[in-house]
Image (cartoon, rainbow, N blue to C red; front, side, top):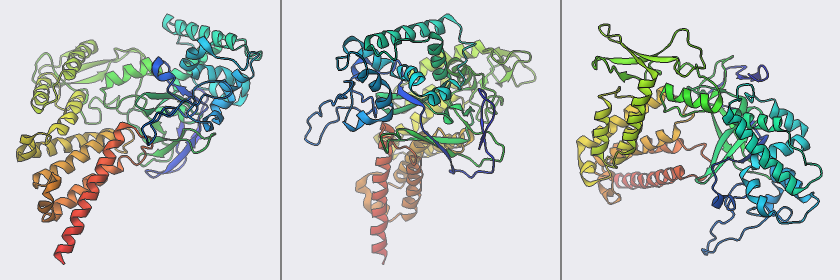
Length: 512
């Protein structure tokens, strides 16, 4: 692995790397709650050391009391978290060494919790020059972040940090440099990685190596975050090869939703990361043969239109795409703004789709009057549809419905393999599909319910096939280490696996 350049750095494989190989680990430069995502009510319920709730329910159902930091009074979940690296060395040190210590934080408590990530960065500039150099060495795009919306954000954060430092009254920290604040905000917007620890807890984290990795809508590495194993090793990131990497190949992750269309991904990346993506997928009109951006020509309504790059348009301009009909008898052009308007209408309709097989199939039929059957929004509707098949009395018994479910599952898996062959980002979607395939296989054999033990015992091949899909489902969670709602599926799949193993074991005894 090597790095090139300063701001435009990238990581390159120095030798051939096999899939799943651990390429590197990285520790945070700085981390904190994601700004503007945690409500005032939740702020006081989150430990500033490990970011877990400080009010977990105990075995007897009572509520565990808050354990405030004995030095600065900020919320913690345990005495041990008061020694966590970022808390101990930054905001706690600022407060405990102030002229007013010990004292109540009073009116600035909320401001500290809401802007903890920015406060820590400012304190790093005074307390740890090595960390500060690593932080400011990252791209901040300060030269293009000159619009009023960016300058207003800088002023707002600058004023809040100044208020915090003045109220704390620590003689070492009474000055805030506005240019440093502008740089910090830019560095976070450009490089920060978002980590979801729990449904209500989301962090932004900056890593020295991981945060400078290239973006691609066709990622070739996967990553996962490791919970604290000591007070100084919180939230390490592990980076593994998702696919086979050739020597000299750039390592890339995705900073956007790879289930979006090219136009939507590009606009999101331009808005959030200040880059206009030209990866292999974005430059392919068929989006790696998935037709995620292919529409029905609005002029002839007979042939499909694909997105092409406009010639002579600067790469940072939003309207650098247009859709051209593939029919030689038509060849009409559809502008990007027209497709975007159509997208917005379809998105609105998708949000209104009822939780039923009929309404979902009706939505897919309406889509085909406007776009390709594999259009990106159709993936979302179909992924919901496979979870509906088999959930009611009729579709669970109808062989035709179950065959249709398996057909859609295979089509969705085929799309995932094209977009994300190494399961770098779509592992959870694949896990749901594999689980639904196992369910359909059992239902077709008449043994989906637990009381159908005797039916499955006589159908060993079906049980083995269902176990195979369950195994693939469980494998999708190999690197999911936090207890998020998605992991409930892994628990359910594991219990189902135990049930099928019991059937095979019982059947083997009877055959002796």
